[in-house]
Length: 627
Image (cartoon, rainbow, N blue to C red):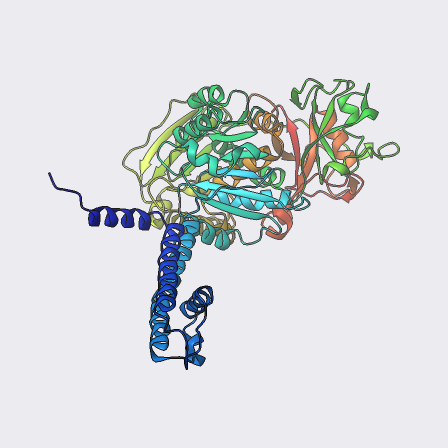
């Protein structure tokens, strides 16, 4: 066995001190400087060489001070006067001081660099209060940031904290590039796994007013979302009050598990079939995705809850005409239950709230006087029953089977659907009302499209190859397909409805030259929905009802089924016409502006009811109806 010497102990002690960081290193250096200064002053005092010309030299404490000054500043000795041994001692102190100060500068520089590197890692604790916390990272984050910043524009010192398993600097760079206009809202990024309770503590979730869990771009995103919810709700250091959690679940079979994990604190946004439903509905009625986007974003009118004592005892049908600047869509009862499009005779009770589309919650005000309805302009026409339809689906991704199932619930019996995609095989689900045929082919090739007799189809859905290609490459292939379809439409002289799925919302501007009827930007719609629910948890029930095919849904129906065309009239008249059909009119779409992005592609949600409008052929009324 080796004998431990005092040199080993000294070296071990030195190594231990050096490994303890900047504070220990500065302490050790200060100790060396103290020994150096005091030792030199003592030597000069004891030898008596500090004087000059037989004069008594400075005392010990004066020598300590002089030595310290020369140690810290090499230029101090420039005016020294004394015997050569004294000057030699001062020179020795100065040279030692250069070493000590240089070492101190090096330690401080290394310490500052280490601290900056630590801060760049994003591991410091967040001391924010009442902030919005986003857990996870995907392309949805940028839309969420923009929407929440818009919603909090009138708040004092708004803040959004992001915790994701991604480099802090990379997150900040991407946010500056893709969401540059956040106004007064501060964004704080931290690096850590949302699945780890210790990492969650960094983001201070206990003081957050809302927590949004973003599904990552992995094969099984629901697993990550559920684990993150577990890390929050089962944290032994969690707060006693309920969290306001908002989480997205893609697979319907995972919804029940997520609700159990959420313990009533989480609003589960079921996005599994949401985009499929919007895609199917939009291919049959152009403009629907624009309507949903108008309702979901914070840029225009949104859905609010407002208690109005003046409506107590009145029916919901009468209340539809009671507001000039707001459109009623439902009732929230006193016990918190949400009813979108309740039966029109439903009376308002004390404590009930109206669910209304309005510019802000303070704009929901009762109008004065009776509504000016032009009964002569109302013409109620029955809609012809649906005939069998032909639908063409170009492209394939994981949502395609769900789209086929949703389409089957809308089309008339005997309908036909052809799927053409650049895949070896497709998982075609069983259907009742339509016959689905799959054909392998390159959807960007003109020869393939020419062979399909595209003008013979009633509806065309262009899906993105999101599962096999990168975002920009997938959108590029979609654009090529749309350009070919536009050319085919112009050459044949026949218009056919085209709905396309885009992955990046920024590519929509490029796609507008294709004159497709509508574009579905799936990540954007989901991000808008998460943002809305994070601001008001009751909205989850409203949108779940609107998106559920079993309940009331949003439809765009021909204007001539409600009112006369070519006649100036106000929207009160339209609301009354829809009311006679047991429907709720919330807006309209003008066909002449269907391709005008500056005017929301012709969509007007919650128009001022007294304003005059003249409908033409092809215009539609936006209604909430059972069918």
